[in-house]
Image (cartoon, rainbow, N blue to C red; front, top):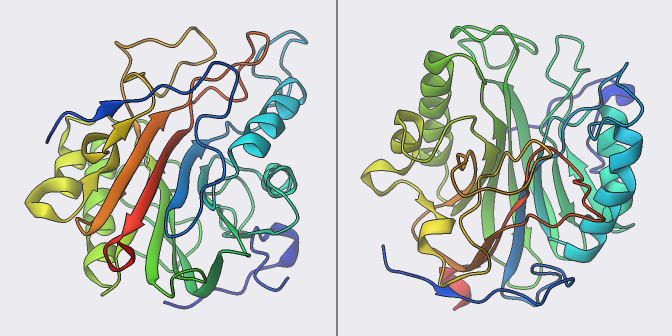
Length: 302
């Protein structure tokens, strides 16, 4: 695993500087989880919805309307590790600033010129230290930026990193991705590529992503079958929310919507708490997706 050098103007990286869980809903108006103490690690997966031009002024998808809401949510939650999807360069910079001065990011855009939206990993540098990282295309030519192979017209990428937890000394792998929204073949081939990434490391793995498919489909089975990964929503000792669909698309949260955003982990990782954050501010959503959150603990830290 080796970090790829790319033009700084397009680069998100700032390396330089099944039992039933207990239900424990947080008080209304508070953060869902907020900062946690070691050895626990707060993880979030969040599709922040790319900024689109030429929207009507009152469209809830307007980035300028969503920015203060997202800043409020991220400042309240303060996860130590965040896998983000659909981030343009300026949006990634905004997320890092909203999280705080100690946060850094890894990744770059998915296009051939390393621009466009990406899947950056954000981390609290007070807690986590990067050992190595790499971004690759989900294609037959993973080292070719912008490449596609499996029926997806849009380039898809995965960012993987090895972190050292400064509080516990444990090394673990973080993987973040965004699978294709149209091609079933692409999603299945991508899931197979993700399996290979997990199997290639001796370290425990946390995988975050917008998988664009429900948690009862072949890509999900490919990742969670045969004990490779577990879904932290299913294994959590406590669920902090109801089982909401993770793509409300600016409408009211609903139970009959698909759960397409997941936090997966290797079996040795304990999910202490998990939740699907449907917090809105004055009725407004920060994104068309709800962030998925989990508090995890590695086996060596028990």
